[in-house]
Length: 428
Ligand code: GDP
Ligand code: IMO
Ligand code: MG
Image (cartoon, rainbow, N blue to C red; front, side, top):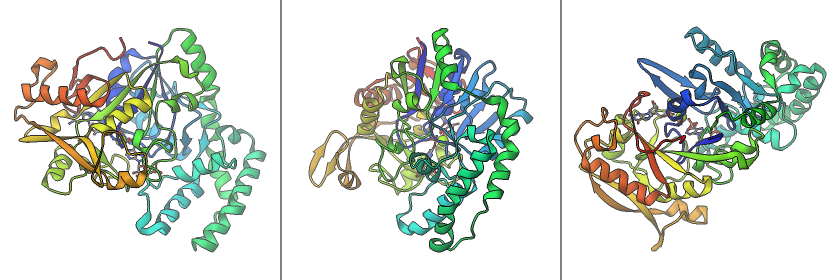
């Protein structure tokens, strides 16, 4: 099973970190290929809880080589803070490899992210404020900084000065902020260069060689399908390719190498930030999901918006990503509900849509059409086989599976590493 991709099938926070960690002992490499420290993955191992942002979750497993691919945007200050925090807890991070082609997030990207959001007012996206959008904008606009620029001071200075020539006009004249000094940006970046140098390599070549040697490489997406810049609910998305195709462009492996795509999907839906969300709940049921599922952002601490399971979104994700297996997470959070609605289609101005509407405006008006399934009250956190689940929980899983476009191969029944029901081997 050479190349496997893990993606989020909804709007993020599905439990990708836990799924990566679960497979950790059976993989050789784990690659982050998109996004940056906008991601927040919580992994619970025994009584230890880890929150990862820029680093792939597989870094927690001994023996795994973690890789930050070219498709990632790196805030180096955050990278070293996160590494130091793991080192302090005894995690071996010495194998980390960083692509020379990955782009950098600097002070001016973070500042621009925050001021543009403030400027948008009620039309803001609700970004994480980490500078993600401005850094990717510079990449596409061909004025970005890359990791390799850190090792050529002359080039670095030229690029930072060129970028700030423009951006300081924006900051001062449009946004009424102080100008940012190029020297300050360059000095900060250079202060990290020597520590970063030994990690920097041609990661595409390293991954090619690993795959040729028959090693197992896991690609871990940040964000999710509905936040993908092409396939998500644009403009309420992140700025990277968070779907399975992004694993190839964001790491430099050939797409034909990918043999399995594991979609992580919550047994209900959550979203952080602005944008359409048809099954969103504004009543006590939403509060039930938020408090039982502890739905507060790992990165920003914001309360997550909560709603019922949306099968058309799962089917869309299955199709866009080529999902071979789903991991259905947080089934335990639904325990105690009398009935559990599942959105099976949308009503858009009186017309039934079984698939995601083509037009974003239609999606904004989409009203969920629900089917209801009986709930259960038994504690399921100790279940380890499908048969251990109460029959109503089994039926809920089967109903969701039948409407989601791929088989459900594992079911999360708690935050811990072992709180999982495996139905089919995810790597077999
Ligand atoms: P990610 O961004 O996709 O990695 O997900 P997050 O870590 O942001 O959010 C998922 C949260 O759910 C984390 O706090 C996990 O510890 C927790 N979690 C994952 N799987 C399960 C599960 O099956 N049951 C419960 N109760 N919590 C889970
Ligand atoms: P993980 O990997 C949930 C959301 C933000 C905002 C939009 C754009 O933990 O699933 P950005 O800072 O990326 O420009 O913000 O995307 N967002 C996430 N929501 N989980 C995430 O990551 C997210 N990363 C970004 O809330 O709506
Ligand atoms: Mg998260």
